Length: 256
Image (cartoon, rainbow, N blue to C red; front, side, top):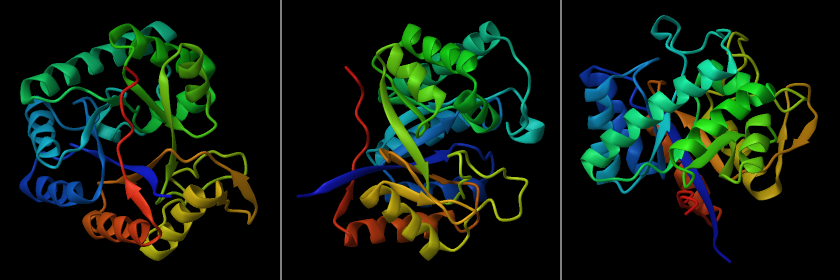
């Protein structure tokens, strides 16, 4: 029996030719694109260009909202009230949906970025605010969130379709959280190691943590990051390894 997995990439984060070319080279090897909404990176022009390229490759297009923190690439945790998180998320989804419609695609999913993603994974109040913003804008959107996180729980409680996300190029802590990027070994740079991690998660439902233990994960969509110089080669090789294992790439479809 054929198995399927969504392979997504955080993208639309570079306003220069080199970055745009690198991101364009990733897209043939993934099934979903999480397009930055202009607050941690990108702008309306970059969003539109990225969505057009994603459309060319038949990718599902999602919004990648974040804190308004370009200086730190959206990776600094900033205290916000639930209302502020709701408004911040709703604002970015709306802009993404408008640009997607302009290029002839329908927004498919929402995946918070960086610090917003990590905070929503553990803070139910913030998770509820993000989930409400998604539901209130378009209840057919899919919520992408860390496997086992409070964001997935919040979205499910509101009746949203969810995609539990795992990471190809990040190491895990024993509690299921991602290793902090500030740690020297937080990222997996070796593509063979990353491929083994993905196959363990997709085929067997577990991941090895930094202390050598195993934890269960639900893998419905797998993330790779587009900000590495070797990201296109990484994506291409990972897609090849998955294909050889009999796993086909397929985007998670909207919930309507």
